[in-house]
Each structure stands twice: as C-alpha cells, then as structure tokens.
Image (cartoon, rainbow, N blue to C red; front, side, top):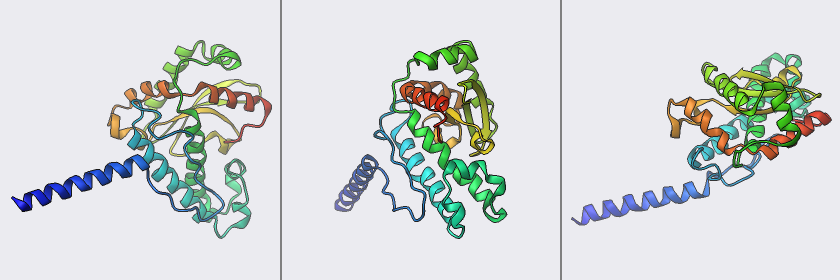
Length: 240
C-alpha cells in the first residue's frame, strides 16, 4: 500500500509539473545568428477553443524556432547572405550559393511564413471593413465566396503547404497556394494573409480533419491586422 501511495504521489507530481510547464510555455534558447524568433503577439491560449494552446506552443516554440535555428546555421559561413533581410534573401534565392540554397528556401521560407502567420490570429473573426472589404468584394465576389475558395484551396493542397491570398501594389487580391514553406516572396510577390495546412498546425485537435480546421480558423482571424497589411501593400511597405 505505501508503494502504491508513493507511485500515486509521483504520478501526481509529474502531472502537476507537466501542467505547470504547459502554462509557462516552452523555454527558448537565445538565437545564435542574425535571425530571431519573434514572440507570439498574444498568449498561446488566445485562440482557444479553435486553435488549442498546446498546438500554439509547439508550433511557435518548436517548429518556428527550428526554422530560425536552421536558417542561422545555413548562413553562418556566408556573411553577405546573413546580412540580407528575409524578403531580399527569398527574392534572390536563385542567386544564393548552391550549397545553402535548399536550406535557405525551406527555413527562410518557414521563418517568413510563420512570422506573418502569428500576426494574423489572436482576433475574433467576424468580417473586415473599409478598403479591405471592398477589395475582397471586388476580386472574389464576397467574403463568403472568398472563404469558400480559400478553404477549398487549403483542402486541395496535397501534403504540407499553405493556402494564401496575395496582394499587389495596386491592392488587387489573388488566391494562391504553395507547397512546403514556399512563398510568393520567392517570386517578388507579397502576401496579404495565409493559413498553414501543415499537419503540425492542427493535428492535436483536428487529427485528419483539415476541413474542420480550415473552417474554424476564421474565428481567430484578426481583420484589423490584415487591413494593416493591405494598406502597407498599397503603400509599397509590406515586408514578410
């Protein structure tokens, strides 16, 4: 009986420690290189119940952090590349040394895509207004039509990748998708917003139900931030 009690006490201590660690999030080592992991702009539970806390923590603190670490490792012996911004590096991908081109494509792309992605969430969904709403109506017919097309694009992306809406300097919107961590930045384009359809973005809560995840994601979109990106695109100042 005492052995059983000690075992129960140990399990309870372990569970409590795990819960405490989950509440605090994952500790991050300092970046070793020019690129750093941006903090989440809201608590990791801000997107509950649509995007669960654990997924946000693992996705940001582990997956995104790995892209940053791998990118720093790739460019450490190439100071001219390391001095580039993400936008310039991706736009000039074909000019980079062949030895690091694939690593930069995957990890600079992942860093850029996720740095954008976190900014888009933490909101309450709803609908955009003003110039952004007018652009959506003009280029997609309506917000509902855009959402339906966007979800279909995400669902149709085979394997890992992104559903995206691109924006040009005139404010015109286009529906896009890209595999893996590719981005229109590689072609000199700009992104208004995107949703990550890699399984690590949704599997803990939605398992293989990507369609449910895509539908739920609209509940946490921060349309004010998307509108800021739209204004920056038209001003020519939109970065990643």
